Length: 133
Image (tube, rainbow, N blue to C red; front, side):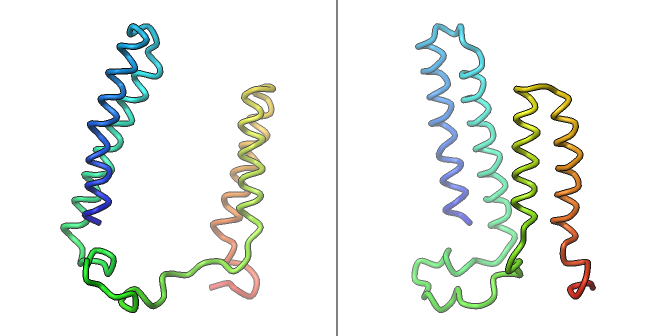
């Protein structure tokens, strides 16, 4: 995780420099782009600091070892759903919510209701039927 933390921390001065250059080029009259670049620099340092903090408190991963072998990373990486239709439902409902911002806010409410149902369905899909715990 040390490499990832240095990538994010190293990107921070770049984003801040881009923010200053962008502000100077636009004459500081366009506040949205400038503030977004400064906030991106802030988010970059936050993520880098979190990754550096986490790297100090966990054991080194196989990919952190420069002399590591591919076989060291073998094994189970987690439990993933073999098939699920819920991500499609979540993305469709999110599309309705975002389209509602352009069409009318009444559509945002309808999309948000269906989005909540889809998220709950996705989270609890393994707590029903033959997969119930």
